[in-house]
Amino acid sequence: MTDYSPELIPSCKETQLIRFQSKVEALVPPARRHSMRIINLALLVMCILSGLAGLAYLGFDPLVRSIVLKKLVLSNTSETFHIWEDPPISPHFKVYFFNLSNPEEVFSGKEKPHLVEIGPYTYKQKWLKQNVTWHSNGTISYKTRKIFTYSPEDSCAGCSDTSDNITTLNVPAITAYFMNRDASWYNPIVPALNWGLGLGYKPYLTRPVFEMMWGYDEPLFSMAQFLPNPPPFQKFGLFLQRNASEESQLGEYSMYTGEGDPYRLATIHSYNNKKEMGFWNESRCNKVHGSDGASFNPYIKKEDTLWFFNDQLCRALPLVYDRTVDQDGLPGLRFVPREDVFMSSKSYPQNACYERENSLVGDGIFDVTVCQFDAPIILSWPHFLGAEQRFSQAVTGLSPDKEKHGFWFDIQEVTGTTLSAKARFQINMMVPKLDIYTDLSKINSTMVVPILWMEEGIDELGPDLVGVLKQAVIDPQNWRHYILLVFLGLVITLMLLSVVALFRCILNRTKVERVREQVENMIHNQLQHENNSQLIQPMLGGLDSSDSSRCTTATHSRTSSEGVTPAYAVVNQAVNVNPAPSGLERPTSLLPTSVSTFKPANSSEGIV
Image (tube, rainbow, N blue to C red; front, side, top):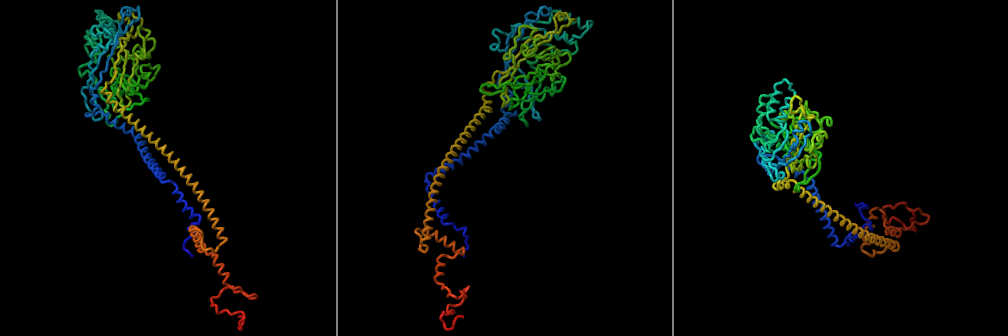
């Protein structure tokens, strides 16, 4: 018997199917097979390129963010430090005075104040950083000196800060009255003030704009040297401290450079080495934090609350997102003061920490007497924008407008740079009704009279700084957009190639299956014909074809190996073996003896 298993030997039909399958596959034209190889290769290349483009698109933003943050960090050698130290911008400072047209009628109690707005008186600013010192805790301290230069072309027509006179409140005189409001009638300070102020001093005055802003000699301050807590200067000016020339008069800021934590860049660390101001009732209101307004921390989000700190305000103001803007092709976010900034504790209980004893309280105003040398100065938005009507109705000549009098910062959200700004405030003075002083005894009631409103800000950055910012903001966005377009193009091409490949595969598969069915039918008919021929002529020497011969031979070999007696063996056995005589029992088995052992039936020896 053969050592091969019959299951391993294919049948005739299987053998011919294999042979015909190779022939059927050969029916596909070589050009079509070549095109399929090209399509498959293109699919592979497109998949690789699409994957690389997708990875580049996903990793682009984190990579750009890391590069931008690294460049923004301030150091002695960084490009951003030189821009910060000497910014190529010219901030403006505009002042609108309220001319008091009826002062005598006001202080005689006959009329309420009639105000006429005059301005703007515009000044160009130059910021100089002085006493720059680096610290090991990732901060830098500095003093900013501001130089103001009058700009006639940006001021009101025909206006001159030296020749124009303004009639307004006499701030030093009213402050003296206010500081001694609790003095009794027998206190010697009362007649002294009445006598001193009576020598030409009135609760109002008329002076040139320049003197009102930058200072004039005030004899009353010399008299005040004999009083408790005298003022630290001999001149009076509404912006005397802003135009300080001596370093000792400048406040020292300390801010984070971004070293170790780039997201804290431009955040104020302390003011005059203090982290709290010490004017208000709670630590959270005294906290020194936020930005000085020149720039903010990078990568700002719309939901962030930014803080603007200014020593003249004695606090930090919260800013919230208002809308998206565009400045010289640079996208930005506009932040405005939160609606509760100048609201009373009655409307917003969290503002109770700003209300000191004897403070003037009301929605839309902010009493800063405690941090202005006890002068009864009240801050508000220009024209009492958003304030209670009782303040605006107490005077005439005001018309609040959100566009003209609003406060906002336009900030580039990636770099934190201030694109443009309009920081607007109104300086008012509380005039108390005091019966012990003649000049203030006839007014109808305590009133808040506006003196001026100011605007400090930036209109534009300039082409040089805009170009630098576009390299960090616009160019990466453009490259990111290009990568996205390439990725989409590759994906679309990949999808088209996949559709073409699928269509070609289906087409080839259909043709192959159709030919294969035809071949199987042919083989089945041929085999059936051969089987019928074998039944009719089993002993023919061969088949008509070589394939049939090999198939029959294979079938015969497999049948013999399985122990089945071939047909020709059965026939030969039937012919050569003699049948037993009748009446005699046929041997049940053949003995291994020679043929000579058997005797003929008619032998004389008989049958054993």
